[in-house]
Length: 57
Image 1 (tube, rainbow, N blue to C red):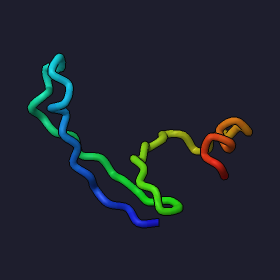
Image 2 (cartoon, one colour; image 1 turned 60 degrees about the horizontal axis):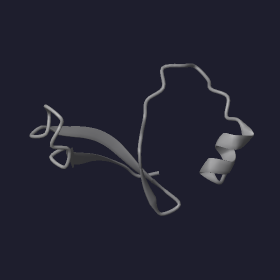
Image 3 (cartoon, one colour; image 1 turned 135 degrees about the vertical axis):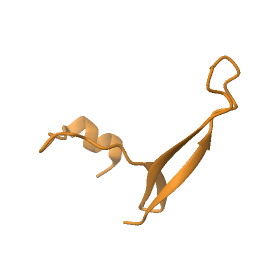
Image 4 (tube, helix red, strand yellow; image 1 turned 180 degrees about the horizontal axis):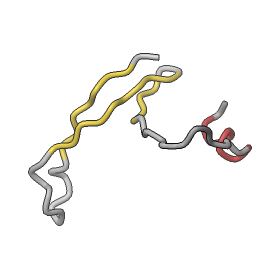
């Protein structure tokens, strides 16, 4: 999978104190769709049937 870094602007939320700041996060592509990558600090995780259905795996 391709992993890139994306820049997201938070200026669309006027109620937030950080409306003029930016966030950088890793993104990846899976089956032609772009996703944010969340790091998990566990050795292993259990993926339930419901999670698989949501991910369409």
